[in-house]
Length: 140
Image (cartoon, rainbow, N blue to C red):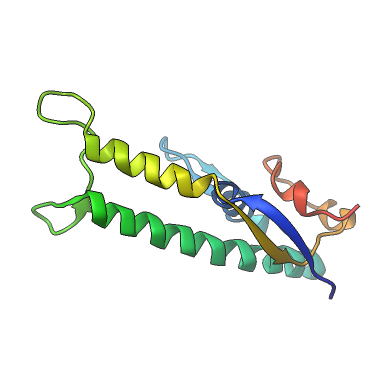
């Protein structure tokens, strides 16, 4: 299995992860991910290989986000750490702004990842119409 390298913007990791695994919207509706489609064994293998790379990068981003929440947040009564979005007077919290700015700075960074490229034939049985980022990993 041949691998390739691609430079991606870290913020795209979350979009790729959702395209592969699905996502629950605030309304409760679920957008189905590619790995939830009825794929053949070969297709499932290739998408799973890509998902493993993306999942590893997402875990790193989640850890960085959680570290920033600890840095800018405060413990609530139930022991969770939260960042208040607004102050008592209704103005935007400076700590929230600092968190957003610092996390967005991380998400705009570029990183080279190594992955197994998908082939056009791997997309034939995809029923999800929500796969714009995955197309970037198809070798044509």
